[in-house]
Image 1 (cartoon, rainbow, N blue to C red):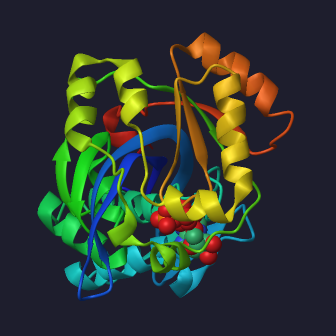
Image 2 (image 1 turned 45 degrees about the horizontal axis):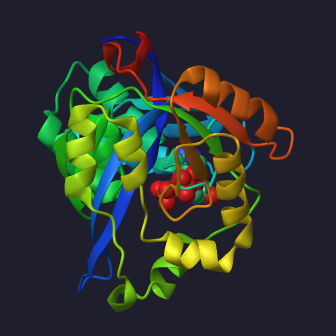
Length: 294
Ligand code: ATP
């Protein structure tokens, strides 16, 4: 058994997000294209004698029970009946509460990392089941890349051979509650929902302009109306050359898609003067499954 592993945990964005129905269990059925981007937390897992311990360089990241990475580690250890312990360090780079699945991706990295440290006792299906118990976005974060997700996000269809995306991501200093956004959503009144079929056609043609036209999020009908700051960022990104803009998850992160890296970089140089938390990002390339060293 190896003693330590370092693993990348990439952020997730929603290229489209269509809310299909409210379910009896309180969750919503979605149809959403999810994409990993190269803005990553770094997770170090060390094998110790006993207990699960989580620490981070960011003091706002909860430790123990409240941390999704902790929950994931405990679930996996209980499932396998592991008697030893693990010390987990989260080097936080993904902004918190931004609609970027920061906690979910840490949980996914811990599940994959622990499974590797323990010499692969669980198959992918079991890891996905454990992941879903931690959160709706965790199964996607385990599979990674780009995927069309249905249900709560657990029915995944990986999309291959698409274009490489050049993006500018802006996270304005707003606190948005995901629960509140879903509560305020008026599903019956949505009349211009994302067309995932058209999005996928553009995806497989690698048609960036077509994609940009179909990047859309139903939750914007709540967040953009409630927080005018979000449409200000969208307008600014367009004036800086974005082909399209969209919000990720329940926000507040806003993303602009650009024709190439150079244009994205130029826009980022300007917008970061106004919005401190702005990032120049691309599609995450899965190399060695994100394992940095083992
Ligand atoms: P989502 O898009 O999945 O709704 P998010 O990206 O908006 O999530 P997170 O960054 O996951 O939000 O953080 C939301 C809250 O979850 C944080 O404020 C924090 O209290 C809690 N949390 C639990 N585990 C973690 C973790 N590993 N990293 C960051 N936040 C975590």
